[in-house]
Image 1 (tube, rainbow, N blue to C red):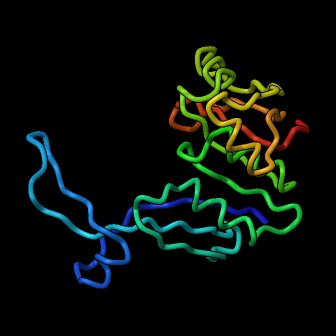
Image 2 (image 1 turned 45 degrees about the vertical axis):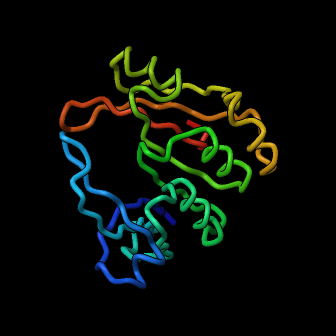
Image 3 (image 1 turned 30 degrees about the horizontal axis):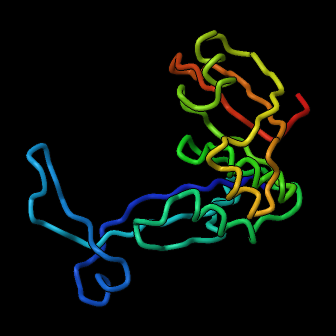
Length: 177
């Protein structure tokens, strides 16, 4: 299966029960806090892209991060699934989690993410692919060890040109070109 995970923030109806369950966020603008508050949640969905169906959805307070919610979807993966994720998910911890779970992922990289991605963005050429060994960032090592995740992983970075002319850099656990 070809799967995808994404999340979004959702404004909720303002009722006491919903406020108690999800909390509120304060609205602010260029001059500061406006005094308006409303309940907000984060929804995360695991989607089967080819069959166009949702496999799992989570609705949590907006203070829960999208990467944390992505971990909850892992129980729905099957052998040989490939999961697509966007830039906000691309970090060492999630990649290590996919590798530890023997699952494959393809993730978009931002131009400020991994050093290997930054190099491919600077090169500004499509069609480049390279295997890279990544080490866990020092500030994440204790957490990763506690979760039983590896402190070094091997991934592949790939550059491609979109029809818009924009260069895209992907990181993947699929190591065979």
